[in-house]
Length: 557
Image (cartoon, rainbow, N blue to C red; front, top):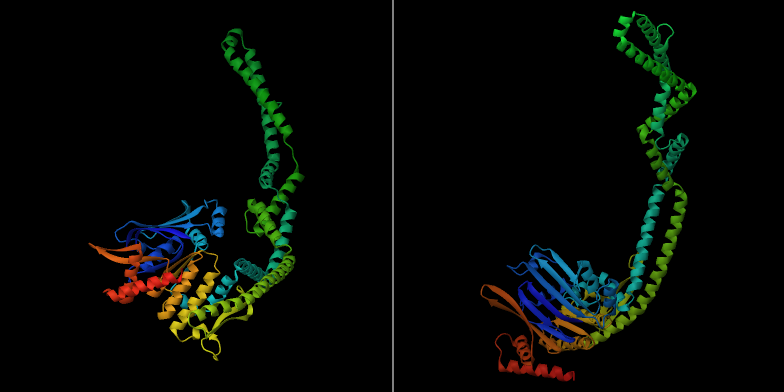
């Protein structure tokens, strides 16, 4: 249950710390005093949307926190433990800045607003003042019935099975519609991949072919030029070596004195002869190594031609063919067996439909049983609320087509007077009757809730007199086994509470602040008197308030 609520710089509250107990707590105050602020702060802690208007004027941020005792909330403890968070108790904190941004924490660890909402579903249940308006929308009737039946997990599983079935059905329809196009694409891909398979161009092969073609195409030219150069070096008559030998011989035959002065020249000519001889040998080796292979050249050029032809056909560069081959083969692999996939998917769709129908049928049985019990329980509460002649029932009607919510819809019907046929709630003419019906439904729903903390926000609107006292008794009875907080304008309801929280607006200097405090017995008498008689309290009004409080407390002891 909610044990503490701390508010700082929120709306017109500067600072507030409340300690709350089990049982029924009445929350009262004049219109506009700020009762909605309390519920707004609690709502933000539970993940409601925040905006900059939440921050008190002139402040940088609003800071809100709510602490819960988890002793009676195993689902909340399990939620925390599954996320490795401390589960002894639970502290939710929300900070909203003046820019409208917000941050959230759960037990001191950063959390998302979605986390707050998810955990909040296990902590507290809020019944709003417009609940009777929501009842006019029949879409809420099935949700209320399912909550009463307590088969939330079965309904969630059924809804997920429906989503899975519909997703597969849509895929099957797309495949069937695209079947001709896919088959045509598959045929084209097979032809293209087979052609590329036949080409079998390996990674890096193109570069090797181009280099080899260059080598083979110029082999004859290299051989011819090398042989010519070798002949220049070592030709029998006109070769450089022959001419050098002649030059050396002639110089060597000169008379002695002339030969001595040309010694360096003879040395150079001798070295040149050695160089020419070496160059000639190297050229001979080079020419001997040049291989003429016209057949290989023809094959390489034919291979390159085929590569370029297929590249042009596919509108890609030759060097992109290997990657194209890989991509087309991958796409073909994904499309292969498409007809088989169609059959497999059709079988899967059929199985999913059968699985959903089985789950929906089980949910339907549970709904039919719960509808009878829910109708009886609400009718009992209506009798308690002075509508003992009314009959109430939940009608289940088959849907024309399968739906996310199951095989049927639910509609709550009421007959306020004997002899009148049961009619939808939206046809109920009296606002007071609708308020009592709404309260009866909410009380029944709350009695079967697994959540120990319940908040009722002016659910007693439209009732008065003796019925108001009975409403208070109903809420107190709910509080006996947990925690009930109710915002009310009715003294008959507030007098029934175990605790009484008073909210008032105070003007201080240039600002307006809201104050909240738990009242002692004297404070409760004064507040009940105000609710009975207005601002100017007479002795008679105070006495009436005292009598009302004493009578309500005696009735519960």
